[in-house]
Image (tube, rainbow, N blue to C red):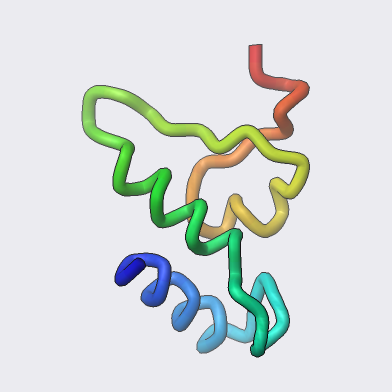
Length: 67
């Protein structure tokens, strides 16, 4: 959650929030969790239909294009 808070603050500071100011931002929480799972050995790609928001924080691809 600390990393999610950092991502959330960064998005707000750059004027690119991914959710309403009063909303719990699932995009940054998911991105932070995926970053923490990633390593130098394995790449983490988030499969989503919301590539535009998630790609700001982590590698993301449309779930239908991942094979």
